[in-house]
Image (cartoon, rainbow, N blue to C red; front, side, top):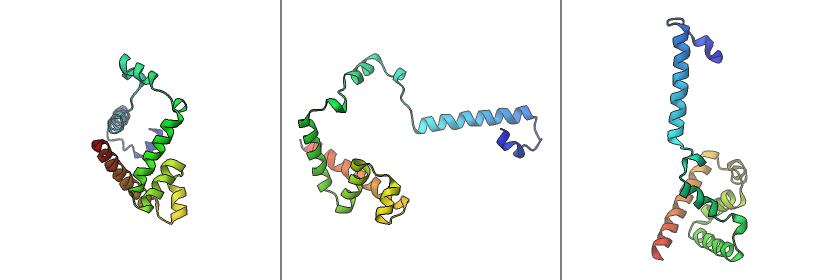
Length: 134
């Protein structure tokens, strides 16, 4: 409210203007939550909470599971173009940021995000096809 005080024109009482700011702030927050819902622990049922508790952590994964996961990932990446496979490896496996990838490739951030989105989508389609084949 104080940051936008210069926008108050005095046509309505100050209390109405302030209440409208509060209302718009609340509506904006609700829209953001609807667009990106946040799941809280208390929102889960007891059964769902117990299921999550029983899920093994990454540290508990056996060497066999890790090897089979790596093989699956490499198999899926082999189905992508070299550029897409490199991009997925850099972003997802190595953990580079969009900015770091842009420095290495000379692409702008928008192009990098779009290429990554499309590569992920292709990977998802290939994974779904693989699941159906089993």
